[in-house]
Length: 126
Image 1 (cartoon, helix red, strand yellow):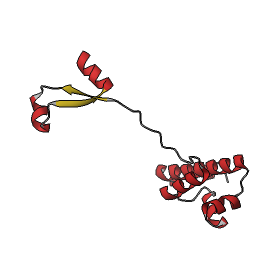
Image 2: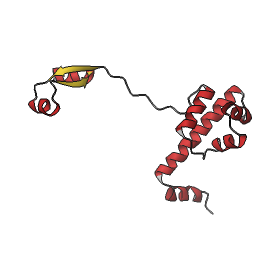
Image 3: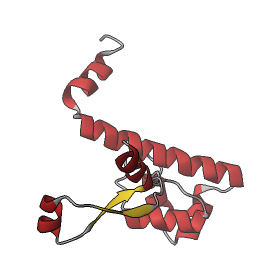
Image 4: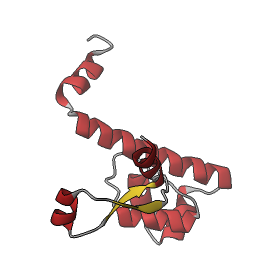
């Protein structure tokens, strides 16, 4: 058997979505392990914190568990740490810019278009 046989099978038979799913679950499990290690906590301590059995926590940390958002939220709260972070979108300030485009006015029944500040600048000065 070639050493890369398993990787070839994985690449051939596991869809990109499933690969991403596996990667995310392993990353979450590793993140939890890191937090527990930093705090000197065992899986047993973590199970008690979460009000779960050690067997359930062991499944979570196997890297194959399908975490629900409720479980991730509970872990975040109990560890007081984010195990999964979704990047926040950049905040924009919005301004109203008068428009005299009859098509926009008739379709939207509005006299103003809302742009983010950068678009308003581009609209006004270009």
